[in-house]
Amino acid sequence: MLIEIKNNADVFFLGQVFEERDYSMQRFSEWREKFKDNEEISEAMKRIQELLETRVVVGTMKKELNPTIVIFHLKNNYQWTDKVEESRNKELPKPIFVSWMLDNPQAQNSPQ
Image 1 (tube, helix red, strand yellow):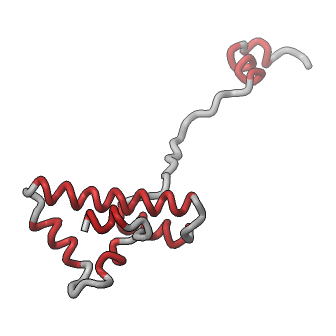
Image 2 (image 1 turned 60 degrees about the vertical axis):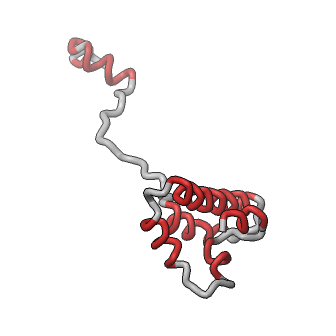
């Protein structure tokens, strides 16, 4: 499968590799589990995933693929996630004048 994918730049999705086969794409997941201790097969399967992931990203950047579909594909198959911005209750800096007023209590009592 790795050789087939390397030799066919039109393959972007794992499902394309299984179109002509007599078994389902589910086999890939089964093989990944079955051969996880076999370094050669495990590395080949990782390489397949990396090649396809890279092709999808590059294809999208070249505007060859639909970005909306690719977003779902990358999230569902390659553990991509949206960037999460954490909001923390940080104290914002006080404006200079307010800081000066707070640091100089006598200024608060002075006539305007």
